[in-house]
Structures are given as structure tokens and as C-alpha cells.
Image (cartoon, rainbow, N blue to C red; front, side, top):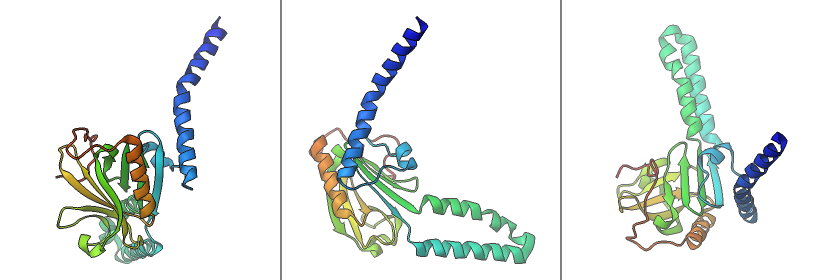
Length: 226
């Protein structure tokens, strides 16, 4: 009797897992059709998306910046060795600096049926597909934003970019939970593909007209304060 109950329970658990497995298989097929990779550990945990994931991209900081950081770190250690205890406080900051660098050396973006999720380190917007008014591949001048990273231009547009994207990006115009229009640029060497997959997600989900009420974001979805 106990064995029968256990078998019944196992079958029930398997049936409950089937929709999740089916969704994972659909996502893998979708990404495979585009030649995209499977999610890494961070993306699996924190960038799951909603529904099927249509696109993933990951940009890394160029080796020149890693070399610059490595050289700076070596100089700090050398100075600490020569100066002795006087440099210990500065030396203690090295692990913190390395952690910050590791976090901000990767720019990730994913497009699912529900969201465009941008993560520069731990920060970035999670934009609901119905909130998007337009998304187009474009070019940008880094001087307009004052460099690379997470930057804001004088006209209020935000950019998430990494050196080496060739000035290519996707410009996303959307509305936040308060109904305010936002402009977000996402730097990407594959800007045309990214824009195409956002358009595909909008077709699958059904984009809402400007002024529609279904614009709510989850907590922390919008990294800007206004």
C-alpha cells in the first residue's frame, strides 16, 4: 500500500514538472533556431524571463580594460609592500575593487515573451513587452553619454553599454509604471538581431497602444529614479 502511494506521488510530481520541462524545451528550440547559447548560471537564476526566452546576449569587457585593472592592482600591491603598514587600508580595498570589476565586466540582455531584461552587473531595467512603444537598431555617440557603463544623457536617456560595441545599440522607447515615457539604449554588436527579437516578442504578446494601463513593473525593475 505504501509503495503504491509513493508511486502515485512520484507520478503526480512528474506530471507537475512536465509544463516546466516543456517550456524549457521550447526555449531551447527557440534559441537553437537563432544559434543562441543556453543561459549561464546567473541568467538561469536571475534572468528567467516570462514565457519562452527568444534571445540572449552577453558582452564582456575587452581585454585591454582587464589588463589596465590588473596593472593598477599590481601597482597597489607593490606600493603596499614598499610602504609597509601605512598602505594597509588601501590594500584592504583591493578585494572590493576586484569584486566590483567582476560584477561590471559583463553586460547581459535577454528577450522573453514577457520582458526585455538588461543587466549590467547587478543593475538594469526589466522592461515589460506591453510597455514598449518602439525598439529599433541604431548607432550612438559615446560622447553624448559621457563614456561607457550605465550612463544618462542630458536629455534623460539611459544607456547600458560596453566598450567594443562599435557604437551600435537598440533604442527602446517605453513607459514605466507611472506612465512616464523612458528611453533606454542597449549597446550590442548584434543590435539588428536584438531589435528583431523584441519585435517578435511584441507580436507574440501583443503590444499595447500608448496610454494603456498595463504598464506595471515589478519592484526594482526601473533602475532610474524618475
